[in-house]
Length: 397
Image 1 (cartoon, rainbow, N blue to C red):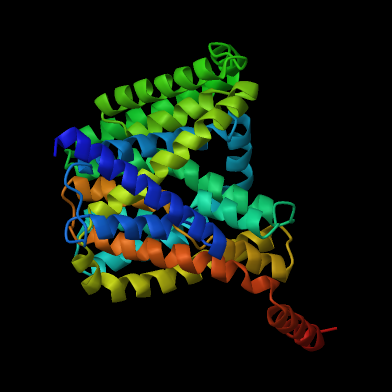
Image 2: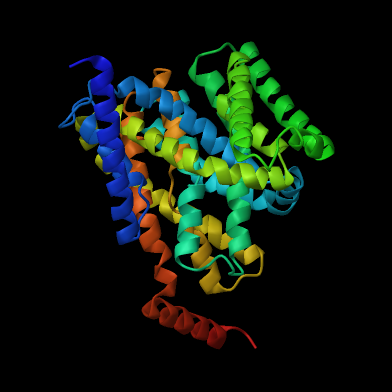
């Protein structure tokens, strides 16, 4: 069979399988991410039905998936909103980083993986999955809850932190000298600041390049600009993901809203490909030795992430039930964790990092939606009322 024919068959069949997995996940009320990862594991090296022709397609598709995830992330926030979130949530962001990045870094060092792997694992355990968290909030009808702005502010802080973390990680994993790494990070920081200033002052003018009345032109223009800037950023040794994020920030108003609408199907397609490719790149046999460490790390960081949300909600004056809802909804890790692990593994960092990250994401993505439902359970509400009543009784009058 001709190679291109086999490529079409493999890609088509896999996309159909992903469609079915998406329907199954929606039916049982979980994120499709773990099912996409499992599909990749089944079809990758060491799997039951390894792909022969489609691997390169999924590798390129995964790179596009990262770029689309980041530009869509940027489109969700205006520069003014980002600056406001920085001012209001900087303390919560610092607490979030300390409580969730430090355990990952410490875990890598305890396993003897070295400082570079520690930096990567810190990012993997740090960042919650914005997509999964947003889906949980929608599914549970909590978008109008008092604690939801607290959840969103933490996610925004993490997203902003990634704009600086990714170029630092990129410089470190490729083994650049200290001076070169410092220059790379300085370029990334300067680019973020310049784009924010330009977007604040000239966002409307930039957005006028695109027309909201011609969706095909808008799709091609925004996607073309995003990939162009991402490529230039990579050429300058700045993360392509950061370049894509900055494009999203620079586009504002109605153009941003329409661009988000037309790009959403593409993002969903290539994000699925991203997760499948990460599974393809991981040998299922390699997961078994790291399954217990991944479970221990997941349990530890579920506690720290819940504590993060609790502290942030308490600082915002949210009641005890809302504090639990805030913490537990932030548990899932997903797209950024996969991006970080892929970046590190492709640069030759600790090979066990990929299977550990896969198992870790699987555990937290499955556990997250289940844990998020606990505060709505009758027994939990009763227990909270009893604890509150006892505290009031022992409190000094």
